[in-house]
Length: 95
Image (cartoon, rainbow, N blue to C red; front, side):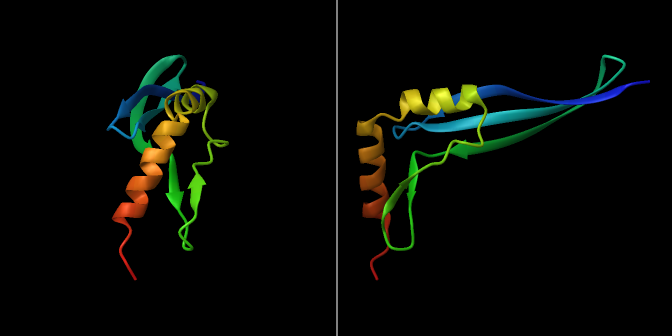
């Protein structure tokens, strides 16, 4: 009886005008090759954030699988990042 656990990134979607990337990750447990369970986890990646000082920081993709990183790098053009940064600045509450 061999139990194995694998992770699959089975759905990657680009949503919103600012090209947010939604990722669905599936954790799959198999016994002797037959799937026992599959659980899903979703998360969203945005092109960047504003730090506490108001500086724009690109999203770090180093922990993402190659496929997710490649999609983010393809859709997050300089124009997309500039528009997202402008929105973040416009939405920032005044102090």
